[in-house]
Amino acid sequence: MNSSIFHTICNCRICGKNNLNNILDLGEQPPANSLRDNPEEPLPSIPLSIVLCDNCKTVQLKETVKPEYLFSKYVWVTGTSSTAQTYSSFFCDEALKRLRNRELFITEVASNDGTFLQRFKKRGHKVLGIDPAKNIAQIALDKGIPTKVEFFDKKVAESIVSEYGKADCIFARNVIPHVDNIHGVISGMAHCIKDEGIAIVEFHYGENIMSELQYDSIYHEHLFYFSFQSLCFLLRKHGLSAFDYNVSPISGGSIALYCSKNKRPETSKLKEKLEKDENSGLSLEKNWLKFSEKCFDHKNKLIEVIKLHSGNGTKMIGYGASARSSTLLNFCGINHRHLVCIADGNPIKQGKFTAGTDIPIVSPDEAFVKKPDTVLLLAWNFEDEIVKTIKEKHQFRGKVILPFPNDPQIIQL
Ligand SMILES: [Zn+2]
Image (cartoon, rainbow, N blue to C red):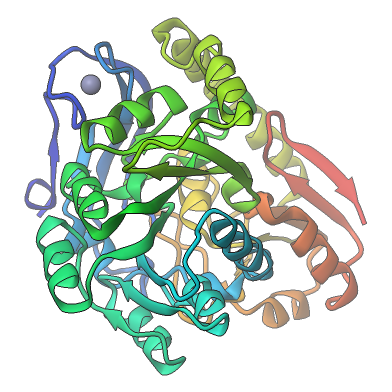
């Protein structure tokens, strides 16, 4: 079963060269989102490791899992996070600032439940979403957001253009790092926009991963770990040039990069960032090997903290059954023996068991009825939002373990 759902690459997905250097091995793990109704169901175990291309400097996974296996029943629903809700409004304002026409046509690649497109629609613009997950696209359709259920690529881009005309703006939030057919997607995006249009690519910045030790952001769905340098190299191949960027509050430091076909002048903010990026050492193998060493140190430290706060009559729960939490739990060997359950607000996940660690996922209400002593904040990148909720709504008083950034921290509520 395993060999039929993944393959190991020999050549860089971006430049095609074969000088790939191993930089971190997180062991064999099941795909993060393969949550199960029954923990007895068999699970594939697939190597999870990253390599650095010596030629174009793109950090990427060594294994590709078939997208049909990973994404056809995606379980992340954008609208369930209030941080994402707030951010969608900021995102819309920032995009509109950079567009001149009054009535715009806006498209989104992997539009999920339509949370972001809805902002544009409310401002009177024409929108179109494209998303491969039928169950999530249906939520968008129910909200009145036109959505095509497809994997976006050059062909789909061509059919969109012939049906609707070219777009003023196309955006892809945290999707480019996830696609194996990356050249098909970027060339499709470039094809979709008018000459004066813009493309916005949001990605989880490799610098945050390296400097804050965010190895939990490495999972099978996440194929690329870009720097500005490596992403711009890819975009240029398809005729897109970056001219500005913004920092997004999602994923512990994502970047929204603004690109155009008709070269717009680079803002001084971007120029400064590009310079910093070049000096950050993200393209150096030795820095990534140091990162790898630190990941194993972190694992030992976290296990110690977990052991100290679970078992012997004390109850620990997790909060946030995200893809990221799956890597952390599997890599550190934290399972149903340590965590009574994981609280998650997404109803699609509730009632299921985590992949490889067999922890039941329940609603936050159900989790706090169990009167936990400690909460392991797996969705630590939403710390402010979650700490506020568990304190005010669930009246939780006890310890919260923050696994990242860097060393584990404990806060007392
Ligand atoms: Zn390369």
